[in-house]
Picture 1: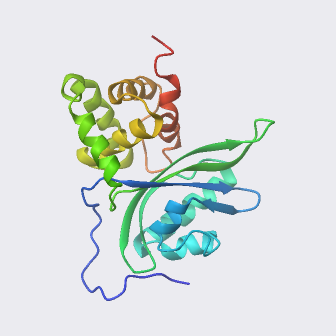
Picture 2: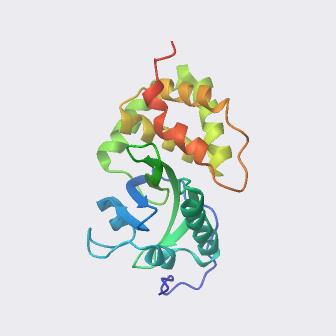
Amino acid sequence: MSVEPRGSERPLEKGCPDVQPRTGSFEFWFSERRWVWSDEVYRMHGYEPGAVEPTTELILAHKHPDDRGEVAELIARSVTDSTPFSSRHRFFDTDGTEHCVIVVADSIHNDAGTIVGTAGYYVDLTATLAETAQDALQSTLAGVVESRAVIEQAKGLLMRNYRIDADQAFKILVWRSQETNTKLRDLAAQLVEDAVELPAPDSGTVSGFDHILLTAHERVGKNS
């Protein structure tokens, strides 16, 4: 199966438009090779929730041809090395619309502490959040100026690890702030503090940074 853009003859651009991201969650269980999508991820791909079974084959069929091989390798590495599935890539929905996404994920552990899967979020940089989230973004901006230094540091970390621009990095910070009900400055400061121990990103997985991005809110205020 192959999902390609319909009726488009112009070259696809590698960059992502500068818009507020939409997000959806997923799980991938290694032993069963079983994917679980939230309703939002189904809709990102153009399906009604539950209309299809999300398999690795289906997921790869939606990927942009230039990104498909890399994503296949990352999924295979997740299974063989028991590492989170993290990526930045493009896919086409069922209407042929191109989406540019960052996938941030962490490990799923069983009761014995063994890693049995990976779970996280698709962050769709080509779609917009609901109007209420846009309103929340505007209310957040008022307090940004006084916290600019640490927020700029956190944005720099996101830009370096995910190869995105400054506006997209800020919107991801706002998403995590809203998702976890954590003040933007506090979240940014914790992210910067946590990142000190991480090695520089390379062409492989950025699962270490994904982990601190998804869990930084749990540590806010605990070291003060």
